[in-house]
Structure formats: structure tokens, C-alpha cells
Amino acid sequence: MTLTKSAFTAALMATVAMPALAEGQLNLYSSRHYDTDERLYSDFTEQTGITINRIEGKADELLARMEAEGANSPADVLITVDTSRLSRAKEMGLLQSVDSDILEERIPSNLQDADNDWFGFSQRARIIFYSKDAVDNPPQNYLDLADPAYEGQVCIRSSTNSYNQTLLAALVTHHGEEKATEWAQGVVNNMARAPQGGDTDQLRGLVSGECEISVSNSYYFARAIRTEVDGLSADLDKIGLVFPDQEGNGAHMNLSGAGVAANAPNRDNAVKFLEYLSSDSAQSYFSAGNDEFPAVEGVELADSVEKLGEFKADEVNLSEVAKNIPTAQKIFNAVGWE
Image (cartoon, rainbow, N blue to C red; front, side, top):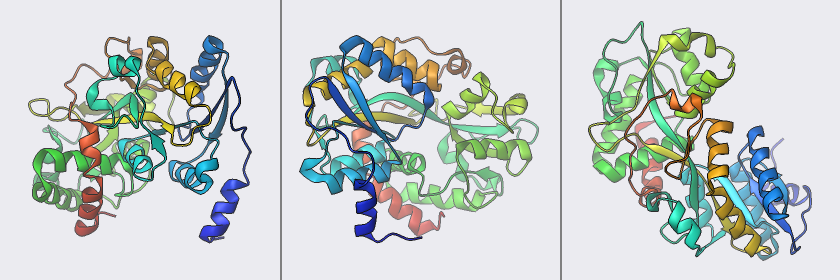
């Protein structure tokens, strides 16, 4: 069944109602779908006495809901994954600037929006993986993925995937639109199959032999180290990994981040929550609970994350990268990246 725009809006508004202004309450809209985040929320409540009321959904659905609710939206905080979604929320006018000495001190400047509309609280490296049995000379940087030597070997997600959109936007930032377009065309030429599935499916493609090289975020592989992932964990020793561009810009990092909603009825509580997310305890939950890299330097890594090894991360300002996301989508369309 296909919903018209008005019907879709009505369906969103008909979901669980939330209180608006309420002392000791926080209304959280979250597209993070990880059970381990429960500890984040319960710990915040234990520390502050503030109760979290939560609406979960896909990022685009939550953005549409906030837009439809307008000035009457009960949302206090939006938390979602990837710079592209955070940037879109800002462009839609759904976030507001936050002036916090704690956030300025704790969160690196390159992981903040230029206007402080959003802040990054955890990171995932976008890594090149390869079959040890099939590949003797794996790509050492993202640009290598377009090398004709790897024709028919690469598995990677679709152009609608936010991780790929931000990666390409970062390449535009570093190398310019022309070179980024050449890269995207080269990757399309080297694809082993049409883009399909999620990041875990790209890794499973190495196990099944569908592809010899794949691209995935670090936490999908780390999760398979920590816990049993069907079709992957048993064969991890067959997969090699490369942190790209270690002699250049460094490995591209995706964010999970949050911002205070533009019409937050409980703004003070919302700011407290963002500040809490930057605390050592919360940062350790991101790593231990979901195999992510903390945004705050010096926080201890989970064993599964530490086993990935040390690497140089790209420190490009992600607020600047976000400006090139529309260009990235234009490039994807131009080269026929499905």
C-alpha cells in the first residue's frame, strides 16, 4: 500500500503521543536501533532523575514527523547516524544551536556542526575488507577501489546509503568534484554485483565468494568479533582489513550524533542529555555496547574495537563535508551507481 503525503503525515502523527513541557522529562526521537543503548538512557535517568520518553524510527520518518509537527513538536532531542542525516535535519530547520562549554571542551571541533546545531558522539571507520585467499595486493586507499586491476571484485552498498553519500562527499572535499566523479565511475566499473544489502552483507560476500573486496563500517566487523553473526563470525580469519589512506588523509569516519530540536519544550533537559553523551561513562557505552569508537579522546575502547588495530583517522571537518553531500548524490546519479 502506498500512502499519499497527507496520509503519511497522518500516520506519523497518530503514533504514540508524548508529553510536551514536563519538568523532569525528555522527549527523544532516535533512529539508533541498538538494544545496548538502553544502558545509556537508564544511566542518564539514574544520574539526573530525568525520565526519557522515546520514539524510535527510521531517520527519514523521524525528520518527516518533526517537520509535520512543526512548532508543536514535543521532540527535545534528535539522535541519528551519519553526517548526512544530521545535515539534512539542520537544513530542514529541525535543530537549534547549543552553547555549552562542556560540549566545546569534550567534543573535537571537527565532529561538531559549524553552528553547533549537532554534535558527534560516536564514530565508525569506513574500512576496506578483502578475501585473504583471493587478494594478494588489496587497495590501500579509497581511490584504489577504482583501479581497473580490481574489475569485477568489489561489493559495496547502494548510492542511497548515507555512509556512502558521506564518504563520497569527503572525497569531493579532499580531491574535488572531477576526481570524485572519476572515482565513482571506476568503482561502478569494478563492482562484482549490483549494490544490495547492508554493510554486514558486503562482508558476507567475501565469505561466499561473491566478491573479493568490500567496504563496510568498522563496527559491523567488530560486532562479529564480540558476538556470533550468522554467515560471518566463523570465517573472520579469512578476511583481511585495511584502514585506508594511512599515508594521506586517514580513514573516513562516520558519526552517530545528536542535536536539540528546534522547538524543544524541555530545552534545558535536552542540553543536559547532550552533555551526558559526552561523559566518559556514556562514551564507554558506545564502544562496549555497540563496538563504536568514542568521539572523546582517551576513553577506553571495547576489546572488539581494540582488536581492529591502531590507525590514522581523517580529521576533516564533517560540517564542511556535509556541504558536499548534494554534490555526492549528483555524482552517484551521473555515473549510474544504483
